[in-house]
Image (cartoon, rainbow, N blue to C red; front, side, top):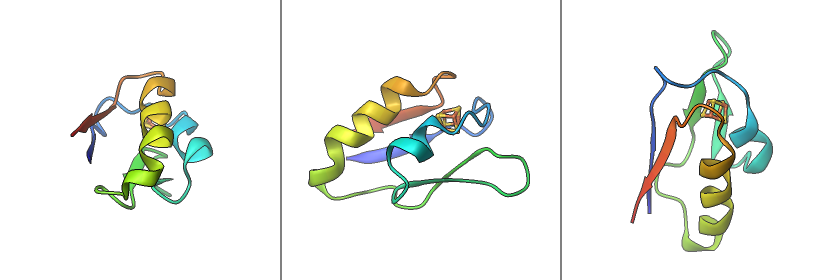
Length: 64
Ligand code: SF4
């Protein structure tokens, strides 16, 4: 899977970071999402999908 993050849509809610801190972080400048690992291993795929669903702004998406 490949994670895409639209920082223009991100509102810095931090749900992704709370869900999967080894993959997502937030910018110290404006709090928008920083993807630490855009192509994580398959074992974290369920948590990535949960983060995508929880994101309130629809900023996150995945490609298989
Ligand atoms: S959950 Fe969505 S809005 Fe919140 S920081 Fe992550 S990408 Fe941005």
